Length: 348
Image 1 (spheres, helix red, strand yellow):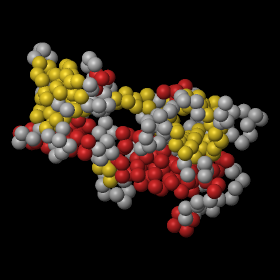
Image 2 (cartoon, helix red, strand yellow; image 1 turned 180 degrees about the horizontal axis):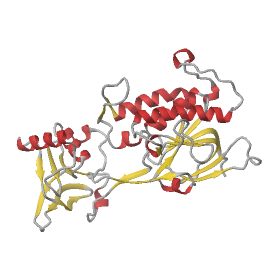
Image 3 (cartoon, one colour; image 1 turned 180 degrees about the vertical axis):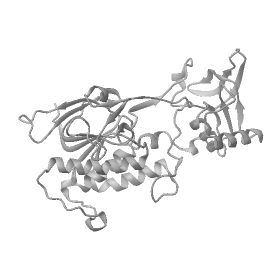
Image 4 (cartoon, helix red, strand yellow; image 1 turned 135 degrees about the vertical axis):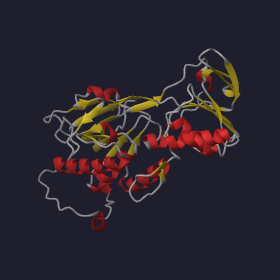
């Protein structure tokens, strides 16, 4: 039987806001362990748009999702965070003071990892998420081989016949992005009107008019043909049953995400439409010692922006330090004068 890990803070969620929380906690000399359901750090930035530019990160006129994650990891590295990936926190118990004076919470994950922690920061974004899968026969045989729900690198699709299904921003944006590297790009949508931004839709239609993109509308996915997981054709059909075969090496279905806060819904936190209500000044939830930041947190006039989540990470870390050391006299210092502490006390 393994001994539970002891730490100052467990951060639930390894997206950009969770990663910046490591830095802010480290600056407050708090040790962190991080749990995420994905098999990689970075959250949606790494899973959904690693090569897509983000324009509202301060001091970066344009930065890709993966570049942002890489910078945040480098910033957090001096504080030696420990990541526990491909697992979900399923148990959160508030500990009685007389039994565990130093630790306020016991956590256990879906793979049995256990923690005693003094505070919890929930940076779960939209919660655990996964793709909405099209209802196609034998779909599982092609998934991970020639059917993918995320694009990690444009280079993976060089010289491929790519079929993209969907009518939202993800479908249109990736069609515009892959047209320069793929042998062919076909976009399948059940309507001629797309739900993407007007500028992107206009670019899509211009590329279609020039023959660089094949718009297949109004059609929807009907079947897959191939061998040993490798596609050769994607079958599409109209609502009236008219079928058509598209030559394909890869299918990218972009039908949105299924998002769920999972066990977080059962922890007795103040919830408002799948979001956790917090005190705006401190990110405190209704349970003392538990904080929520980023898209999962809500308060009056909340803006779901990465940069707002960064500010909330700073507020939460300072509130935790004050909670754990209430008699400590703190003189605020800018990082330019304080520097980045790298003492052994920050090691997990």
